[in-house]
Length: 212
Image (cartoon, rainbow, N blue to C red):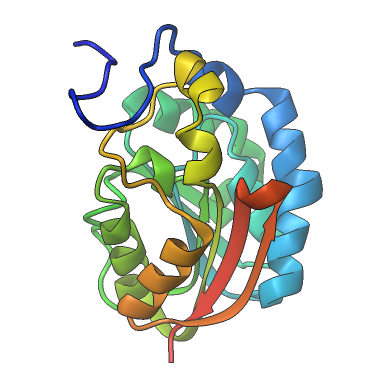
């Protein structure tokens, strides 16, 4: 399958896909731990004693570890689309024991029942999904009243830039998240945005939204 977008999409082509090199890197985990998660914590507060979900865990389990260690969750479930990543994440968080559970699943069609979680975490998941608004809607569905969605994203300004597209493949539907569209999608899903911060000239945004 070609990584070139459909003709007329206006999205630059991908020539060499190195997405996984960055997603699973130690540097990526360090940025998540030392920069992104603290911003989300400041925007939305902790979830002490809560049950939480991370969608798109990747392979290192950094988000799950942060959910327990930084945000104070009593239990963190993880959902990951790819089988090898599920197995890698389980191994990476083995030391956390029963506090963490990782399963295969699709963030656009979660298996969890309505109102299951006190928080849902999504670190750079939306721009990998074609139907990324469905991810937001599903997160809202599985949140309990008062629960919060913690999300941070590389926005369309960066994801659809020619230099990044050349070396990192993402869905080429021309509808990558922007700071405004992420906030709008949260509101459309019935959530109230309680905090948002955008950095790097609009290339990164962090949003926390609460379910009434």
